Image (cartoon, rainbow, N blue to C red; front, side, top):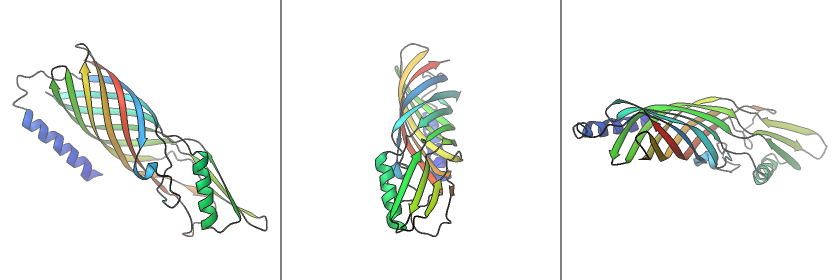
Length: 245
């Protein structure tokens, strides 16, 4: 993660260095605050619905809302700050049945029942260098960020193993409110409606090694699905209204 963030930051600083002279007589970017909303689209293992992959999250495409800030420190080089809330859905009936079938086969049981309650909800707080290219009424914002991903909730799973003598064993995957570090790269285009207001579109790639997941029930013996960490990767596409100051 640190390596990718360093590369993104170096790229922005290089772009800045190459354009300092050209910006001497050019219009300067204004600091801004934007209200943004759009979609959070899970990627990689976070989006997978594979019982055999302990990192699979079964996450769904859903909404995101937040605030985006650009504070310029020197010409068109500044600091970008993003705060977003995202909901990545819940396990559906197909997901639950796939898990039940997988547990049933792995533990060689007569019957396995799985119940799922709750949703993936989280907030991101990301900060990093930003460089903006201006052309007439358009602004292109390039940013590399790093920061905190805070899980508000994750789905809770209850697994009940039944066998022929009517005894039962219970395994539960618990709700997680864990924190994790993440990084992001983003590009956004804004169009100036007036000297003070823009509208814009932004695309952000966000990645984290993952939050801690806890379980209760039988001690893990290496058989079947047992998740202890959930990597989070998402693509956010948002529209926003921007106030410049």
